[in-house]
Length: 377
Image 1 (spheres, rainbow, N blue to C red):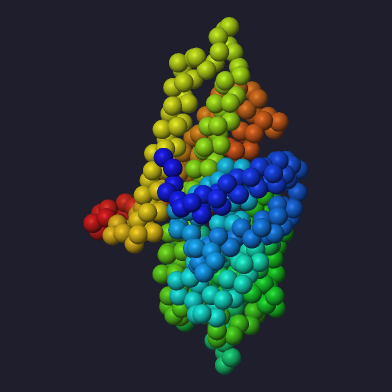
Image 2 (cartoon, helix red, strand yellow; image 1 turned 135 degrees about the vertical axis):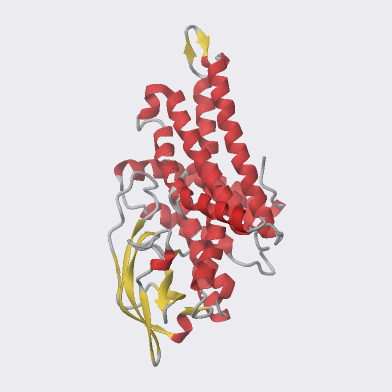
């Protein structure tokens, strides 16, 4: 099953594929293996303005649908999931501004994205991951605006972000604020050393008496939970698209490997057990992709199905398919699948995190289950 995209988006997809093959794939392997800062890749993505794919269209450039954006992220994720996460995290930070931001806020963020800049979605805290009701970061009012204090952890683009969408308690309610990178009082920690996804910077950010103008508030003072939920609906679908890209890469690499190997004087490609394993990889990947495309179409066409249920379902199925396909790829590569000189061990390490980020899969199942019991979905 393929994404439904326009001719314009198809041309962009080919550009992303060529760019990724030329500038991303091998560089990502080196950065991952040596655990170097991913500045080289981030700068190249910035140069071609890839984060600008999330902007509204104009007279010269048509706006991309969510499905088209997902296709581009999936293609980038096929070559390096970390790079795709850095791009997707920028849209996640932009989502609250798209939904409830002022024209000035939209222009500010659009100007950054047109230059290939990055954003950070600052929601998670040490004691408030999936449970956002326990957020401790606080914004206090003063005559000229707000004063922000607190910390966030596990933030994608923690180092490279040019702007941040920060969620904080305000008057006992959850609010969202647009914070520029140059605001005084922001301290960014060194990025975490991770099992996988090493080309995406993830770290902690502290806000120490950060003074913000009144214009920094996104939407209403009590709208933070609503904005976070709507933003994460889109973020989970994009997370699923990257995971699907990983699963497709795992299947491609495994098929190519199997075609060149023999066992017991016969081509492995003729082995019925191996053919069964490949078919299962393909089926699980395609089932997850179909669920994702359905969720994207419902969102693009403003369908009547519950977007939270569909995005949670798609994210779960896609991330599970990515882990299953990459794990099976390692198995079918044999001992070489466990070695760094072959691509599938990195794919497996990168895949695992998609069962965790944007809300762990256990949380997604709780969301779907709750709505199945309480509502007609």
